Image (cartoon, rainbow, N blue to C red):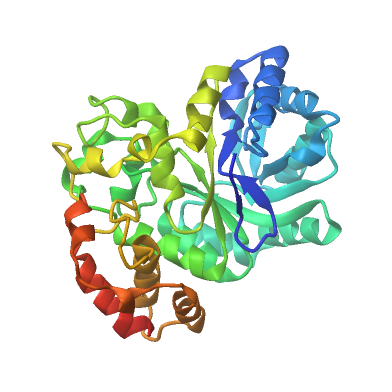
Length: 381
């Protein structure tokens, strides 16, 4: 298992994580078996957004005596009312539900206290200016949560969070299908295939910008819905008209700027194996780009997705990294000094391009790499 820094939190998380939602379907013994197997495979981060009491208790029993090896995302505002999950901003109910989470997990702290499910910009502002964020900040001051995060499906909310200086990381939905959708406050659009009829046009600028803003501000991303709920595994339900594998979906998410971990739901040890197979997969097995480029429905043409197909460069340039920094720098009227410093610290960069064109022949999306290396030299030094 490989590990990555989660933004500026100081936490180091496994590239493949555990999204615990599916554990709601399982017995105490089955939950313990899956969590133990995740530990064996090196997974060290889990997300528990669920408010259902039994699954919380079952997770708590499974990590008893091993709490310190887990980095836990626990959510503020996810409650259990009248036998069902309810998202709330009612402070009394939110506090009661969070206290219940701590008790059932058998812990006195949560590593990542997530302000739960904020998908509207107006709601984000109300939370940040009101008692809900104040409550999260109080928990952090007391050491009950160590870092304040937020979960969202809306890139516009994600950008507000990343720029706020108060949200340290976000849980965001990342996969090649969702990345084609423009910002929207209606979550259902992410799951309705008809949404894509007029939307397939490459990575939506709002989402690409979100990843770069997070990267620039040291706001780490953990990923939910990396498989698009399994829709990408079937050509009949994939908006591209072709199927991707779990390894390809994971590689796509893990090549986005600022992404530290993809949180996958597991029903069985076999599901865990399918995800952690990423760590030993060959470049061909990780290759989502060739699949998408050959799909009957795709429009990533001309866009760098940082897939790495351009390598190897005879000059030793990390072309994908140069492209990431170029995109990050181009977002600003004046390039941030930190971006220039990162670029100039590379052992080789755009100025070392000899214009051989090998990278362009290998790029499945037809990116004009030589021109981008020239632009990087002009913009970043």
